[in-house]
Length: 135
Ligand SMILES: [Zn+2]
Ligand SMILES: [Zn+2]
Image (cartoon, rainbow, N blue to C red):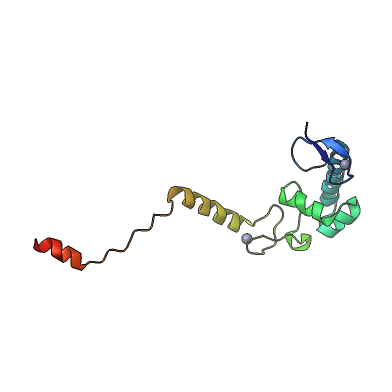
């Protein structure tokens, strides 16, 4: 048992995983998500604000659905969703295709070549070396 207070209604419930919402609120949110999806499908120029208004959910929740790539807007420039890296208008998710690829490359690069340990700078003409050579 892992009792928690629901973030939305404050009721105590047995928390399992995901966002800390009770089953009733989760159901409710799922219904609103379906509404939002339907609304966007029927409204080619829907914006985040319009979806929030239509489905009576906070804009933050609409943006979360977008970040999770559950909601996809038809027109990036009016939806008001931008790439978190370069600010380009995007349809869904967190990054534009370009930045997504960039992130993937960075990740692969980090795995392939781990940072080389710092090598201490050698002094070529150290007096001690000369001393050893002369012996
Ligand atoms: Zn609740
Ligand atoms: Zn980008």
